[in-house]
Length: 423
Image (tube, rainbow, N blue to C red; front, side, top):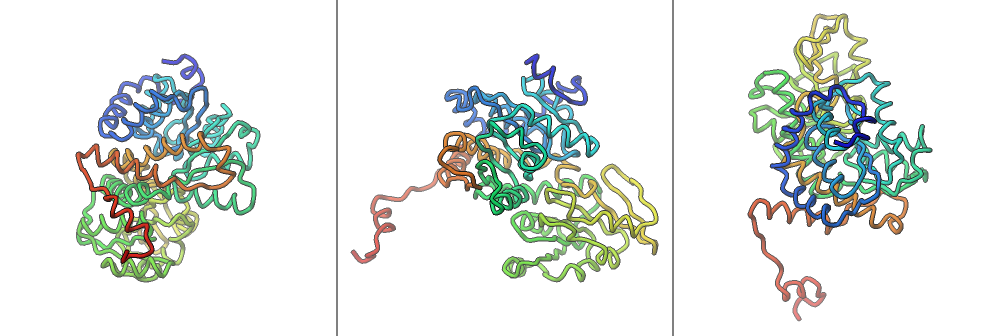
């Protein structure tokens, strides 16, 4: 154990470390791609002498990513990106492994922000961000902490929206790699990961059947596609609401009912928001919802369900089960909100499956190395993950599964490169 990391860290309970080690060891066994990258990092030491600060949902899979970055020579500091997803036993285990941790489960909003700032006070050379939380702090309240930053990598759609807004205004100060926009992220993590983990959180928390119920999926991006697909697989009748006409046509052709939110609000038993936008469920929708309707969010921030308007319409509010808040409306109807409107798949479950996060965090690790190797030439902008890194992760994944694929023959390469197809 690093005495420095233990001395500097802020965690809930160091006695929980043994259970945390077991969790990290379990996911490690199911993350073969990240294991392969760890071997490369141990040999090459790409981050030797550098400081890396990470904010992500601080559970076992994230912990293993931090250990992989540490294996590459970095001095790692980590904090949580969501108050309800931090696992105290995992935090304690990381401290024992020499990583500085500023995180605990369910801190107050003020303490949560302070812990995030503490993670940046090491003045890192590189960052891994989630939802643009680090970038926002650095560009607003604490620009003094960005003096060493070469760049970083962003995990989420929400974060990329914020980073591109900074770029558009001409005030972005360092390059960031948009990991969320890589094929191996949105095709697998956003679709299959969110699809499974969101329903894991809903079912685990409510202990109710999904088959035969009406599920309203608000937003049909890659996360929404996954949530709708898994709801259908569980036997639900699925309604999709959208503001994008192309995505609405896609949802229709995928076999789902498509309608405005105000109409869907009358029919839904479960509501899952996955838009990255604010107040997509709000007052006029509460006014027509069924008694007993259950709402939850699978987007990064707890703004998709309008909690102030829900409270204003309620005569009482109480916790009826862990991670279930009951709001009794003035007309006697009861509506339920899971995990405080925060990410239900992490606030009320363990997040994406380890095999899914294996490829996503492999992209994070390789993207961090890429930005460190190229920050002088990338320029100050939001940079896409290079396709060769994306494909490399996919090839590593196939190899771990024992799957082989074909390669183009020289003649096929020549054909694809030729303008004269009859030559």
